[in-house]
Amino acid sequence: MYTSSEIKNLSLSLGAEKCGIASVDRFKNAPDGFHPNDIYQRCKSVIVFLIQMPTEIILASNPVPYSHTAYLIYSKLDKIALEFCKSIQNNGSHAVPIPSDVPYLYWDNENRHGMGILSLRHAGYLAGLGILGRNNLLINPDLGNMVYIGAILTDIELKPDPILENIKCPPKCRICLDSCPVNALDGLTVNQKLCRQFTGLKHERGFNIYGCNVCRKVCIFRTRIKNTK
Image (tube, rainbow, N blue to C red; front, top):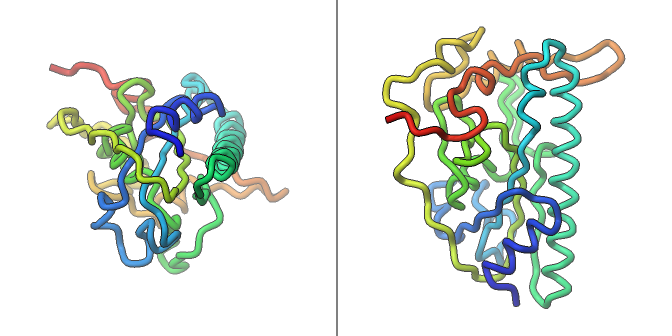
């Protein structure tokens, strides 16, 4: 059976850049139906891992490089999750992968509000991988907000990582809120209807393009968490 240290080494060998572990009891505030045990009843630990997008891509004037890279990273995260589960299985335990993006079940069509089967940004926070910024993004101390998140659920009881408690967005910083073109951010959540209507571009050939990344781009913690004191 893997130890926490071995799990983290395995994640790096599979291509992840950061890995953290949360015990399942940390998810007690998850909404009904979105708790790890609602997905996999035998889950004891949630393993979360990150990949950083090359940071200059978000500064491109054309949205295609960012969109294309995001989809490549989602695919890579899902492949890491699959190989993670197979390695855990071959070592005598079990694991279930969580999609890094789609598919998911919950969709409110009127408000264009979707929810993944597990909130990956909250899982990342609970696994000690970062803070939740006012822009509603997970922000890792070393990689900033340009991180994409993958996760697996396992029946192995692993030692969890400490939650980051001593880092926060600067008290008076509102740059992400004030820069949002459609005022979709309130510091706690995102109005998905406003956000999707503006940023979710559908090309006439069927391509899905991310048309706005302002909340990532303007954040003072885009590439890493800097000392703001």
